[in-house]
Length: 289
Picture 1 (tube, one colour):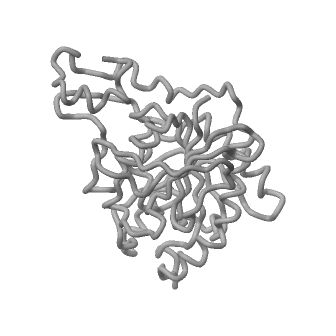
Picture 2: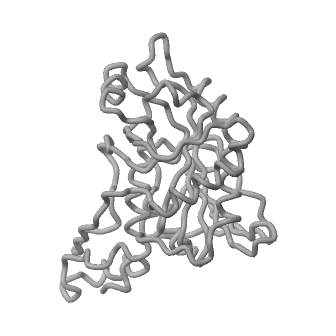
């Protein structure tokens, strides 16, 4: 098994407890990542973990403007094979109250202004994405969360659809009511293109989403930054405990379909791909060129 990645969402700006820590500044063809990648050994497990705060340590970048490609490319450069991410989300269902932890298994993309792929510039890759989160990691992360915090009164829910909006504004009431009417479960701003890029990098990926609010579909509900930040902070300990347990108990031999997800997806003959493009995508696509 390679390095385990952890992408911290809103409210999570510090790594898990790690030993022999080093901070690595990665240079990627897509610019600089959100922050330096903190790499170290997790406890007595002997497992190397690479931590990246999605919005930077000072939360200085809006969801639309995040360097998603640089972030995932840097984790690939760090040898990451499995990623656990976290998200702060709004709930679209009465039973998913603030404080609930959800491990979603589907995404609906409502973004409009983001770079969704590493590829292009002379290489076309058509990759299946029916199951956007790695099913194997969804199972594992859910079990880890239930083990870590289920007995403490924290509700852990497996499965559900995360609708990813552009932001940085929250939903209108009409939008929120529409998302709810579709039977979707969560609304957030950062699942896309992160999940797509993980798949394109053959990194197994799953997220644990902490509910902070009821969005604005609910009568008298009005999402405010104060509410979101307050509840995100309260969710932080449970999310970290769940991820720590997931790292500690991840089977050494856990192979995921995502690890070979590029096989048969390159639609451009190798000899037709420009040399500059080959060089750029070699860490991602090199085994297939």
